Length: 158
Image 1 (cartoon, rainbow, N blue to C red):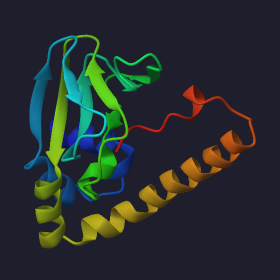
Image 2: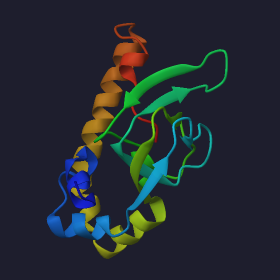
Image 3: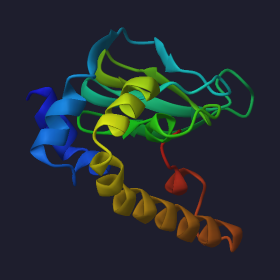
C-alpha cells in the first residue's frame, strides 16, 4: 500500500481530496524502528504524527516507573501523535516498538506548510477532529463517573 492510500485510510485524513492527499504524501517520510526503540517519549516536545504501516507499537504512560501502564497496542493502519501536527505541546505518553516497525511520519512544520498552501486541508479535517474531541470528552465524563477503566479510554498520545 502506498503513502496516499495509508493517509486515505487514516481517520484524520480520510476526508481529504485526492489532490490534498497527494500533496500531504509528498511531505511524509518512511521511518523504521527496531523492537524496543522508543518512537516518541512522554513529556518531550511533539513534532509530528505517525501511521503504523507494519509491525506493532505500544502506548505507555510512566515508562520504566512503578506506575507504568500500557494504554494501547497499535498495528498497521493505526496512528498516533496526531495532535502534534496542530499543536506543539508535550507528548502525553511514550510509544515504543514491540516488534520491528515501519511508520509514515509527518512533521508539524511540513503539515503546516501544506495547510498554508492548501487551506482546504484544515477545513476538511475539522469535522474529524471535532468528532475525536467529542468522543474523548464523552469518555472522560464516563471515567469521572467510574463507568469505564483507564485502559479502555486510551486515546493515542498527541
